[in-house]
Length: 142
Image 1 (tube, helix red, strand yellow):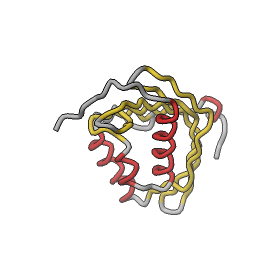
Image 2 (spheres, one colour):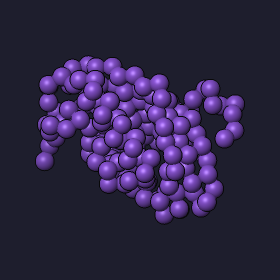
Image 3 (cartoon, one colour):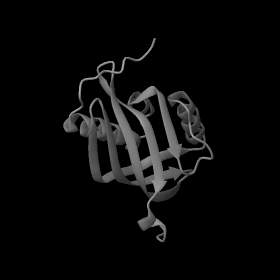
């Protein structure tokens, strides 16, 4: 089944709600809810990874390896959000403070994230995510 990208313009409140739900699912390590926020054809660029992830399924496979290593998200906060509307797509950018735990060892990161949303089959879904380290956090140790 092919996804139907719709031309109805997005509203800022729709994008903000979709981003909030995505971040909340991530903060709970809620695998099902988190990946439901992404279109199957979504792509991902994460600075710790050596390649672009070409689909939601590829990212889900990587996520499962993290979970198998005992990884989980213990906190995730979004700040400095900005929504840019472009018809039926939108760019959401923000700063994200994330604390994860792997085998009882916690790590906190501060990163900048951009998520591109589109209206697909009546839902607002993420179609691309790009994560990069925040220059402000480069000198800090959490």
